[in-house]
Length: 258
Image (tube, rainbow, N blue to C red; front, side, top):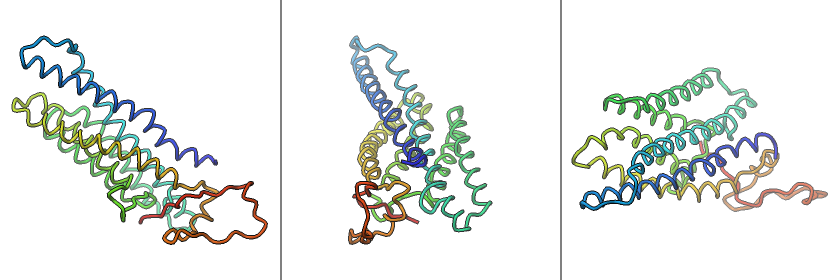
């Protein structure tokens, strides 16, 4: 593996080491928080400590930021190193300075919007900053180099991840409303939408593993991208090739989605 191949593993590494453990903790505290609320609502003495609520809130905020941050890292790698990204355009002489500056500003704009969303207190600013953060993710995800698998959007790692990230943004935006709303409508919305997010996270575990199997190493790409992935055939190797010296990827190659 070359250096860039190792760099491509930063996104899945952080997802496994940071996001999924946090997801388990958040779900555990969410369940305990609900059970304590039901028990105290029935005028029963609960054995569950009251700290589970604040811990669920703290870890939930951390989970939301981690999901969005991991997605930004994946988008940054794809935009620069992905097939059709900045490096490929530079090799073809098609890279424009304005595009590089614009994308750089979009990353800064999205990160800044997320940081201020954590600090916002009024409903108006929370709504504005959540919208700006979501728009930034969508715009960055639409750039060349990002593999989207649009023809199979229903199990695309990108689209599932984007929806999950947008749900995390929405969760951050309604935190204060959950605790102020006596009708519990925001709490119900939070529970339903984050239950959907959990299903999406499980889908990310599957689609992410699948995509890792389909990504060829850097030195393999010139050969792999000559394959006919529709008919699942590749050009015949020249005589004298030693398969033991340089094994090729045997899975279906990824297709650039522009």
